[in-house]
Amino acid sequence: MSAIEILNQLKEKGIRFTPQRQAILEFLLSTDTHPTAEEIYHHVKKRFTGMSLGTIYNTVKMLKEHGYILELTYGDMSCRFDGNPENHYHITCQECGRVFDYQYSFPELEAEKTKDRGFKVTDYRLEFYGFCSECAESGKEAGQ
Ligand code: ZN
Ligand code: MN
Image (tube, rainbow, N blue to C red; front, side, top):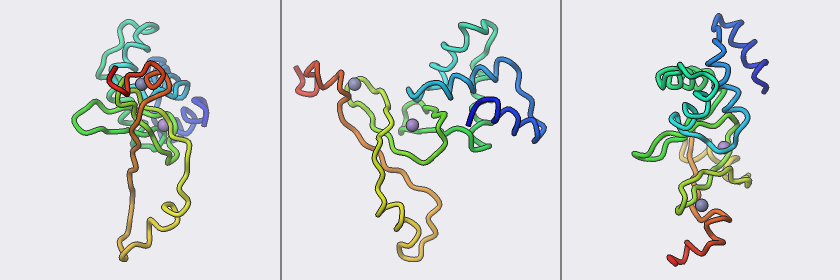
């Protein structure tokens, strides 16, 4: 969904976006780096110097609540945000910490997830870990 479509849907719900908040949304839709709130802040602040970190938190919270973005949480590490709200998987590089989309699907898992032991499954997480191509190339995974 484009930023304009999202803004129009929110407007119909009575939610208006300032240019600052619009820039946050546009940045999230334009990147696949899964930025943290701090990373979003540093990016958007280049255009809006008066931007506060609080505006970032409010905006991502609202976008998440309305289902337009995903929040990825990693234990006690920072949360990351994803402009793609569809269910998809992620792989974290154990060397550089970057989070990438993992482009595989697991049809069996998708089909079975609501059936097990009569449990009404509402959500699930599947995380992958490894070394990104850059880190693997530089031999860091071998501890060199
Ligand atoms: Zn890496
Ligand atoms: Mn993603």
